[in-house]
Every structure is written in structure tokens, then in C-alpha cells.
Amino acid sequence: MEDRLKNLRKTMDQTSFANLNFSEQHRKRIHEKIHSQDEREEDILLAIMQLLVQEKTGYELLSLLRGRGIQTFARNEGFLYTILHRLEQSGWLQSSWDTAEVKYYRMTDRGRKILYKAEKSKSRRKLVLKGALEG
Image (cartoon, rainbow, N blue to C red; front, side, top):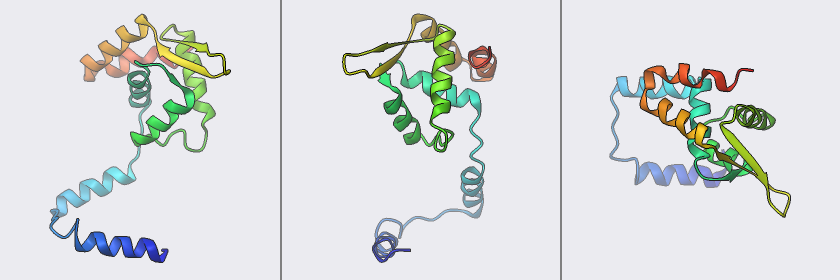
């Protein structure tokens, strides 16, 4: 580890994290969550739709998804554009180009209705979102 990272860690151990205590059970749950980054398709799709309530570019969307901890597109960014294309074909999204040749995506009314249903019922979310990536 670089010296500056070691110094940062040492400083943080002495200040920020000095008073934190976790039970063994809590540590185990955190460890399991970190190592089971099993991002389900419906969770990824839901995040995409939530972020596209306001118009965004693919690049902006990718950055925001990474900010939410979704790493699915880290090695294959093109996969995001495949999903966006399928959502557009399903009528859930629409896209437009601006004068600088930048493509923007936004949710349609139909997409907003699907999003509302998916957010309303967590138990039925998979069923509600199932048709989006098929076809």
C-alpha cells in the first residue's frame, strides 16, 4: 500500500473509527454482503428506471449506477446501452439527440407507470419488470 494511503488509514483509525464497535454477527453480515455482490437483474433495472425519471446521458447514468454500487457495467459498458435499447423498444424509455450529438434518455409515461408498480410492490417487482429485458 502506498505511504499516503497507509498514513490516511492510520489517521482514520486514530480519529474517525476509534469509537466504532461491531458485534461479530454484524461483521459477518457485512462481510457476506461485500462478497455476495449478486446484483439481480430486477434491482439493476429498477435503479436504471429510477435514475431516468429525469433526462440523462448514458455516461451520466453509468456514473450514477456506479455511485449506487452497481458494478455490473464496470467491464462491459456496452451492456448498459443494450438494456437502454431494449427499454426503448418496449416503450418504457425514449431517447433524443441534442445539437452536440449527445444522446439523452428519459422515461415515458408508460415507463413511469411500470416504475410505480415495481416500487409499490417489492414482492411482485420481478414479475412487473420481467418483460423489459425479454424480447
